[in-house]
Image (cartoon, rainbow, N blue to C red; front, side):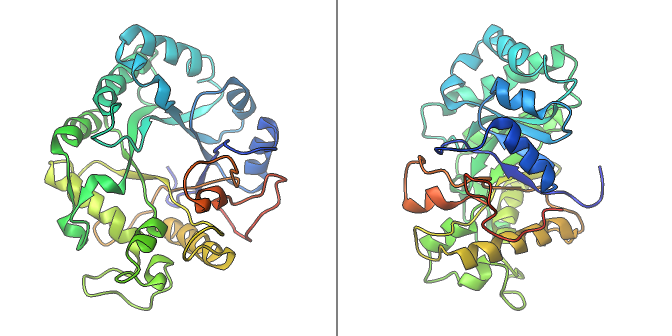
Length: 314
């Protein structure tokens, strides 16, 4: 593990006229992006990744979560989607569920599915290379400010998941979006604080909202006896249009500053002195994404592979 952490980018595919899978892998390589998150297993993508040495987070698709509570189905999933590629594709993490909240029907499946997939990976003797986790969003944290007060609002849901991570040396994946926090509370959150451009620190010692959000999750981990569990930022981004504060200029500022901060080795106030493993969301604008208009404008590139911003990833 090198001291400087390179930056990953999430490869979402909910867009028309996106490049071929091989073109996408080549675009990652030509830009020096050596980590990728994909949201479901896909043979074409995995074939294109062979020999690239790009580190991969691969999700279990939401619609597959329930079936993974059956050990045989989990074994089949691993034997189909991981084992045939594991010699040539650099899998790092399997994300069992993305932003599954405690009140979602799928919440009951997360821990059994994680356990079964971990067992299947272990039986293929890949447990040292590939860690099993789940990706949470910041709605699972109560009292996020000051960050030290952060606590999981559903201990019954997160406690056993965190115990699993701790016992297997796996990180917690967390999607961290200062953009959404900012638009949800513009009265109290200055834009500069969200964009890393604030001068100096605020009254609780934070220069930027990203660190505050990340440290509120570290605080929650500490409160369940898991201060040694690392957080990997599995998504973070800023839209170029479609909402308050959404502009090409703000997005360019956010991405450039986040890349520099994550790689700088300064860490956060709670976890100083180390790089922050971070995946930017997302590689392309995705015109078929549901929800607010801004959701369709998080791309670093347009579908014709043109960069929207001048960024140096590594």
